[in-house]
Amino acid sequence: MAINNQGSMTEGASLFHKFLLAYILVALSGCLGNVVDGIIVGNLISEDGVSAINLSKPINQFIFTLHLLINAGAGMLVAYSLGKQKIGEAREFFTRALCLSMGMGVLLALVGGVCFPTATTHLLCSNEQIFPLARDYMQVLLLGNPAFILMWGLSTMVGVDGSPRLVSVAVIIDNVVNLLLDIVFIQVFGWGITGSSAATVVGHLVGIAILLTHWYNPARRRLLPIFSTNGLWTSWRKIISQGAPLAIASISLTLLLLSANTIVLSSLGRTGIFAFAVCMNLLQVYNLFLSGTCQTLQSLGAIQVGRGDENSLRAVLRKSFRFITISMVITCLVVWCFPEAIARLFGAKEMALLAESRHALRIFAISFIPFCYIYVLMIVYKLYGQHHMALFISFALSLTVIPVIWVVSRVAPEQLWYSYLIAYLIEAVVIIVIHRATHVKFKLQTKE
Image (cartoon, rainbow, N blue to C red; front, side, top):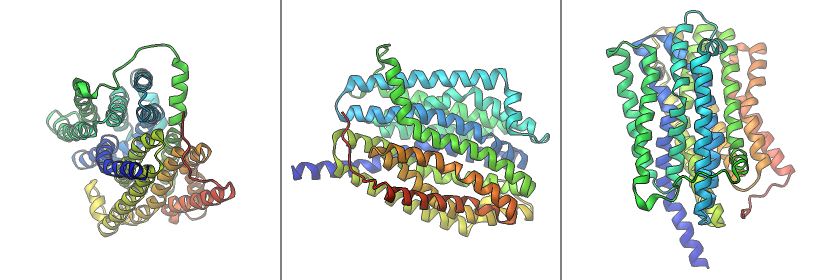
């Protein structure tokens, strides 16, 4: 038995980097697109274009929330089922997640992109000068959101089904197409900021076409769709329940983006909102590593949970925390050494913008460290069946920042950039206190 456990643990550890690379590249599809758009728009259009993209981020985050609620939760259930060799059950979860996510995506496109694009933009942008740019960018974003959800969803499922390399290829090509078409649509075709959003959508469509080739391989057809209404509502309830903690954390982040944009703009004006936009793009870079780590934990970790193999699960956890620590240290060093270069990358030329960005970026680089650890810890609680703690972290992760940033803006607005760091440190202390007070133990709970 010891030999089997050791072999299983070695297998889990060896698979870690294979899954991690695939999911980091998947994260590029969701977050690097915004960074690339910001850089190109800031240099080819204007600083107002960067602000317009930043104002659209709550919409992008909401779309990502739908993906997390449906596909991330279903991905864990599919992994559990595959770990138990219940192929039929895995197919059912895959099919129902696919149908549910596409249905929600089409509904959002019709409501926000077709019927009420102007009203939707008014909810996020009140500045008359930025409004036309924001409306053009947001409308295409909303119309193309089914491609976003399908790309992220298929990436999750194809990776779980044993083809993380195909996911890597699809996402690399997706982002290359996006980058090239950004320049073509904006400069050659003259589509302006609309071209930037359209390039992202087209890139996702190319990525989807590549992912669909997964089913051409007879050896990789475990997740063939099964269309049946038996147990439909029960399956959807399980899918949403599994994805709820991540989705709640994401929707909380959406609320935070809305609140923070308003507070920063009113407290620090145009200079502050530009610096904040650059900081949010920095968060996207952190998210490359964070999302890749968490997706690996969800997929590879859930397979070990399905097998009841705690040794392999702990090996995956150790590698996850080691990787996220090294990634954060390197990223922080780069930001501290080159903050002005990062601001210039997004088109900043004025000395006031450079000075404010330098100050804000260095503080945010540190602030994101506790954020990343807390987010990974939420996945750990989820894997070990500590659903209440995972749910608490989901709520608190972003909502803690809102009252803190509001108080700081009233008491000491010149210290506004420290709000995120203060909030995350408070939350870390609260988690430790609750963990100890409730005597939570990380012990694997085998699911039937």
